Length: 125
View 1 (cartoon, rainbow, N blue to C red):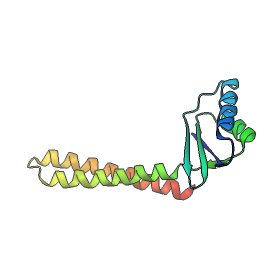
View 2 (tube, rainbow, N blue to C red):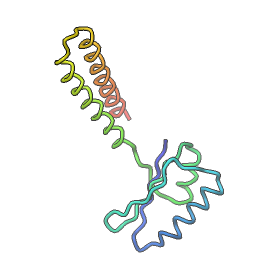
View 3 (cartoon, helix red, strand yellow):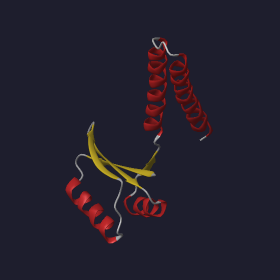
View 4 (cartoon, rainbow, N blue to C red):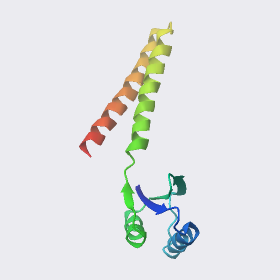
């Protein structure tokens, strides 16, 4: 998935820009995965997520903007996996069944491994 971010100064005509974008998307038969506008410190920040690279490239060429890396969302997943692994380990301590405890600890190890692998991939990119 590709994310394009366009920053418009608040003084810019947001309605006209959004209308032009919607017409472009319709003309190119493109349904973005996400289309959102956030007001941030004097700017309107428009986020458009595309499932198709060629559509993202064409949109970026037409409207400008920059690529947004999805590292924040990915790191949120990594943190969530680590948190869940710790919760599973804590729960497993109270299990009296050795096989149930083993299964829970294996699930925690799997979540830790997923987090570690994702961190390695992010370091490489």
